[in-house]
Image: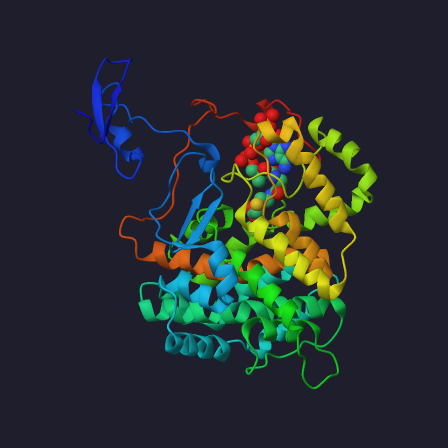
Length: 436
Ligand code: CMC
């Protein structure tokens, strides 16, 4: 009779163990009973980069990487992108259900109410060098927010947790826009409470002397779609950072600054910046085949391609491609699009990419849109961080009340020296060190 269990035979001892299987997983801690003798610590599983380790039970985001499926709280991403606003999706991620009309009104009011930041935050941001990377400014400023809300450290209080979630969703766009204004050397623009979430963000970014800034409705909607597509992506590098840092019971501002730092890297949210640099370097459609050859030779990676989980077309990339068409109707065509399309065409037919199941990911087309909106490449990871704030918070809130979670603390396989006698300074041999 089949049972939901795994029988393990330890060939070192001949002992047999039965490990229960639940939701397609065994518990790694169950391996600890597998011991050679009483002094043995017990068997561990070694999984660098968490290739096959579930670190949480989560009800937020579902991905089927082989079939190219992404759902937030059960809703397919394409339906959310077509029908919803970003604020509705943020509510869905945080609270688990789409809001009713009344709930959405209250939620929008609450978020709008929190968009202002303390004037000292402004002075803090003004202290950055004129050309500071906006992501560095965002990470530092979000961390600094914790000093304005000391009560946020009471992470065991549900109301306090939710208040910080509101503040972060509301204030991250303000900080993001001010980082951009700082680089441009133009005055910071305060939030406008009668504008929607994306309309207000565009106003804080682009308003100059006009008394009121009205974003083009197509561009505002395109940004809304981009924000929805970037809002969460289950246990990725930055969500894992958010949960791991949060597991120490630190305040969510500090945890979110860490998550944003994880997002900044070129293999994660920094990839869209790298895609644009790559397309600019290729420079012309005619150079694409040569470039692909160099990728295949291992000179560098094709940025915006490949994904740890998707082994099919990233469903977000499909939707972003459609959004790009709508944006270019308004802004004019970004000439880099032709290079991107050619790159995608060649790569999707090439055995190297086909056999490794490398498809365009979310970052492949998003940068081209951001550039068409007039944003410098340095702002791209910031544009990712704004909507991902809701996802990070949903992950953090879920982890905070999960009775199975404790402080994140992986094991290691120690491969260093065994115990040895202390060497006095005169007895030590010089080693070669890299000069930095
Ligand atoms: N270009 C060329 N070859 C690639 C690429 C790429 N972009 N990605 C993976 N490969 C190859 C890799 O060399 C390896 O080949 P081989 O088996 O011959 O050694 C094979 O494909 C498997 O790669 P991997 O490094 O084991 O895959 P991974 O799951 O560890 O990496 C990834 C996932 C996203 C880091 C990687 O695909 C990559 O570096 N992509 C480029 C950066 C990028 O676009 N990142 C954005 C990810 S999506 C948004 C986000 O997470 O923020």
